[in-house]
Amino acid sequence: MEFRMTRDFTKRVEPAWISPFRKYAPVALILLIGALLTQTIIIPLFNREGVSWNLLTWTGVVTTYSALAALGAYLFFLIRDMNKVERNATEDITALFKANEQLSTILRCIGDAVITTGEEGNIILMNEAAEYLTGWTQQACEGRQLEEIFHLLNQATREPLSNPFPQLLQKGHHPVVDEHAILTARDGTEREVSFSATPLLDVDRWLVGVVMVFRDDSALRHAQRQRESLIGELSATNEKLRFEVAKSEQARRAALNLMQDAQRAQNALRESEEQLRRINEQLRESNNALEEYAHVASHDLQEPLRKIESFAHLFMEDYGPKVDVQGRKYIDIMVDAARRMRRLIKDVLALAEAGASERPFASVPLDRVVNTARDNLSERIKERPVEIVANPLPIVNGDETQLTRLFQNLIGNALKFNDKRTPRVEIRAVEQASGWKIFFEDNGIGMHPAEVGKIFAPFKRLHGRNRYEGTGIGLAVCRKIIHRHGGSIGVDSNPGQGSTFWLVIPRQESKEPGEETTHEGQERDKHEQNNS
Image (cartoon, rainbow, N blue to C red):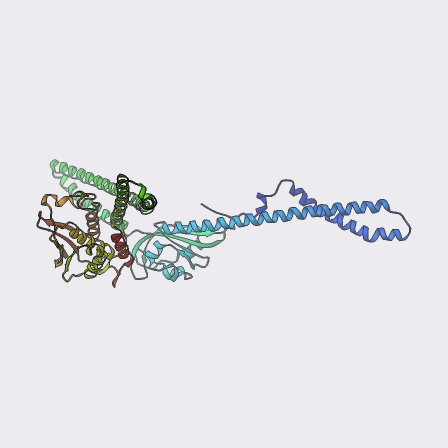
């Protein structure tokens, strides 16, 4: 959508009769000047000579006041039109600013990388995709020349390619469309890209800048090379088959069958690629819907529940003595249901966030994770004696906020599903070739081995709500978190003999050096645990 400020604002507000008025206003001004000269010079001159000019005098007076009235009306409409022009200019400027904000939002959200230069080739704007591919930030490259950050190599010869800006000048403002090259980022990373360069022209068709649009085609080029390799292999196979066909009819039939199989395989490959594309599109739509639901759950759904609880408490404070036992019971049931609903919404939101989180991984000491989880469960631990034994644990690569929630859920389950006077949980780690296996052993009530495979499904409960509170989502959140870390989770248990939950965290290289913690997420977990 294009927003342009009009050059002649008065065209939108000027009535049709104003134009003739503007045309003849100078004539009225000339008549005014003539009348004034007549009044001040000619009439006094004749009066001194004893000549009576009453008719001329009155004519001059009438002409003078008529011209003054016309001039006053002209000035009135001129000032009114100027005010309207000023208002229209303000509205157009506001629309221009809104359009600029919309354009900035679009540039941030589109998947292609975009760089905009001025008329001298200096960088004016680049979006986040361009920052990622070039390795430069908007702040670092602002004002620099395009060739300083946009280094292109010929794919075949690896010779440096020239800046597209002079090419646009030589081609007379014709765009450079769908060129392919190798882009060298600031850190030396090379990517195969396709790019286009389009001139920015003002209203007079003068070049005022260039818009560069490019995308990472590395995966596509790799797939094309694989396809060409397969085609080459098929061609070589076909040549061999042609030679064999000349020997016997049976060989010809075999070759024909093989070619048909290859064609079917190629068709199946294309169908698989199309199906994968549709699945990815459905996955993106599902993620968008999930994010939208999370937003609704965190804002729109919880607010009515908070009001129900608040008004129920106010009702009991104001009218409590007037309510009988049955009425109190009904109100308690209503408040309890509202609390359970809020708890369910929070757990569903946690389940959605567990799979949609995009926080980067970092080095995470699991000893610190255990301490944070213990602090978050402090209110529950105060209810009865609890023994939590944590043996020395390793440092792993992951999302500390999610790992804290994972440990907190497993420790919390061990304390909740426990009928002993002193619940006990022991946490230990065993190093394996592929990573670390963490065990959570408790002395709780245990479960039947046939039910082990069901407990990680959302909303699955093995016990009634009257006996053990909860929503049945905690272990589903644990499974999503460990799957995001590339690991697995399971449990070994028997009724009355406790349970041993285990999880495998693979050994990976940290994506970013140093330790990265997210204390805000930990504080949120602790707050939610205390509220529940």
